[in-house]
Image (cartoon, rainbow, N blue to C red):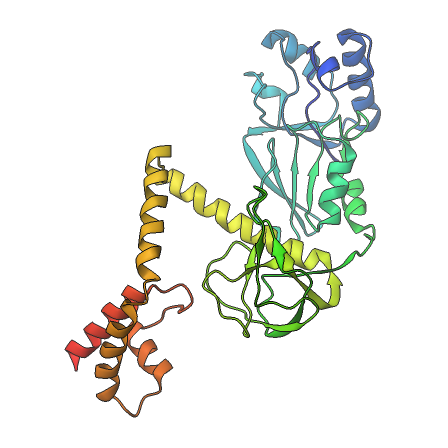
Length: 359
């Protein structure tokens, strides 16, 4: 059998109070944790220990305790682990990937937002956060195959691979919602349920006078970058759109569909942020503030009605030379393969100028 565990913190007296563990002393805690471990894990079993075996203990003492633990042990190192005797383990790594009966497991001491095979049903097992079982249940309810194998989460016992598989196979309760799924890119009717809102939360309410509560509008999907907070409707074009919570779907749907899409979008944002950090694109508060101020100023210029006639003149000049083309074709021809939703006016302007020069 294959087992997993983490965060025993043997020898760590303070962990009893920190995690409200039901022990009178560190000696009792160590004795019970070792006893529980060996009552489950047998000599020929395989166990992956996802970090933090001991804490506040000399390495020689830690090694002597680890020798008492049954099984063929693999260590995925945690932030409190010491330089244990490597002969006590089959392997010691910061991260491991294993496959069991066709299921894929990413093993790390820390919880991960994304992991190998996640989108094809892979699991991520971890420790570190000393959660309770409601954390694992919440992950399961949201369709996230991430599981805390730490002792605080699993009644101070190791957990088997079969237990984890069975846990995620249990049928979850389907919760239906009408909350707008802003990442659903289908043209459809939605209903306005509110027209007054305090988006910033500072007590300053805004009323969207053009909206009518109870009226149906047409949701406009787009491929541009957005954070899921705003939507656009066909009847009232608006640069930033409207807060999604002013509307509802006409047909209820499983809320996990929207939650999954939101998580995927968040993961992409986090991956982009991590890449920026790795490549040194990190900015100070002052640089961020300056960038925002420049963005606001640029936005003000981009919204100036006086710019419109210049674009029309240039567009007319280019279109006159290609009257057989539709407007959409002309702009796409000038820009190439570009998502038009997020394109800036000045980029279109420059592309049309380049097109005009090439004619």
